[in-house]
Image 1 (cartoon, rainbow, N blue to C red):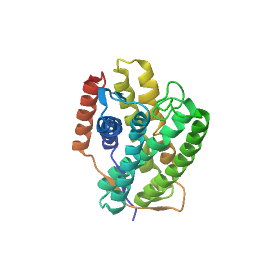
Image 2 (image 1 turned 90 degrees about the vertical axis):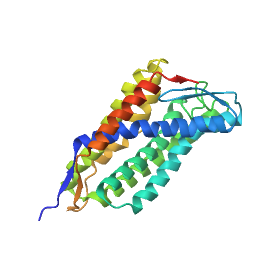
Image 3 (image 1 turned 180 degrees about the vertical axis):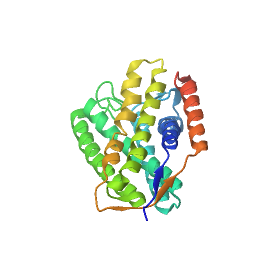
Image 4 (image 1 turned 135 degrees about the horizontal axis):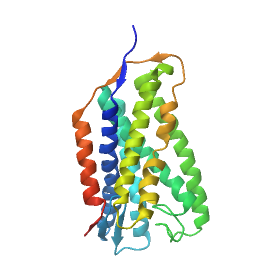
Length: 264
C-alpha cells in the first residue's frame, strides 16, 4: 500500500504570510525594543524591520543591538523542544517551521553582519556594534560562527524533516511544497512590506530581503534534500483556512501599521 503524503500549497503560503510578521516582531519588539525599554532607553520608532532606541550608549547599546538575535535563539530552542514532544502532522510542521526559521535567521545575522559590517552585529561605522574594538577580528569571528552554525542548522533541519516525512525520492514533492513555498511566501511578503518603509530602499534590501530571502535561504536546500533509502512516512496537512486567512490578515496589518513605521 502506497504511503500518502499530501501538503496543501495554499496552507504553506499561509504559514509564510503568518509567521514572517510574527517572527519579525518577536525579533524587533521582544528583542530590541524590550532591551531598550528595560535599560531605561526610549523606543523612538518601530518599523517593520528595525527599532530606533535613544537615550542609551556603551554597553547598553550593545545589549540592544544583540537582543534581537538573542531572542531568535531563545525562541528556536523553545520551539525545538516543543516540536520534539508534539503530535499531529500540522502541529509538528508549524513548530518545525518556527525553530528552523529562527535558527536560520540567527545564524544568518552572524554571516550577514560579518561579511558586510552592517546590521545588528555589524562592526563597521554603519553597524550597530561600531563601538567594539578590533572590528575586523569581530567580523572574521562572526563569519566563522555564522557559516558553521548555518551548515549545522541546515543539516539538523533536513534530519528533523526526515523524521516527519521519511526518506527517499518519494518525499521530494512534500519537501518542496513545505520548504520552497514557505520560503517564497515569507520572502515576498517581507520585501513588499519593506517597500512601504519611508527610510527607503536601503531598509528593503539590507533588512527585509536580507532577513527573509537571505536568512531563510537554507529552505532551498531542504526542499531538494530527499536522499536516503526509500522509506516515506504518511504525512498529511490539509487545507487550513484559519492559517490562510490569518496569514493574510496579519501580513496586511503588519504592512499597514509597521511598514510605514510608528513614531513613539
